[in-house]
Image 1: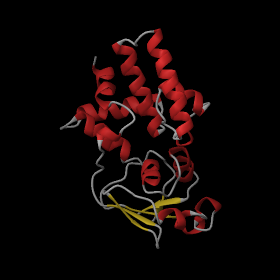
Image 2: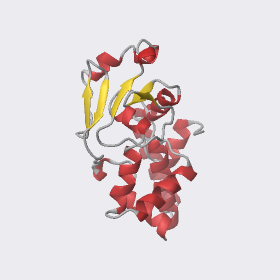
Image 3: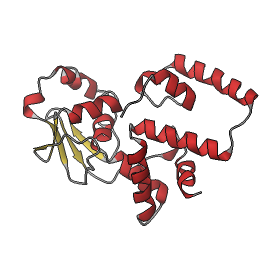
Length: 201
């Protein structure tokens, strides 16, 4: 997915949706921009919902067309629509690689998968949007173990905190999907309810 200048995009969205924007310097600039925006006038409800949708898209590195597809799937599935959508987004293979600490960012995780470095249940998968399932075993492909992108992995995993639904074996460099993705909505950079309202208005 083509993104463009990340600092500019993140400032427009008003949220550190990219790894490189998750700094104190960016936070200070973002707060200054928000004050300026308030002086110019508040966004309409439609504008607010559109902004939240964009935050969600860029948080997971998903194209507009693919994101719309995920929302439709979430709305059709039984249960809480917001949780359904987050479960789909969190269950993407590239997202799992980032959540487990195997990749430093969503974009790096996407590249890692598309270049064929990751296997699922022993088979190489090159589709970043691949949906993992409970019980799946993810690992680094044998021929990719000594690649530069994994040179600091062992050190990074020593202090990394992964979500409860992922079981990581640092020694074997393996990830097991132990349960359905669970997300604390208060920790999200976007309002998932506003996102759904945008599509159901």
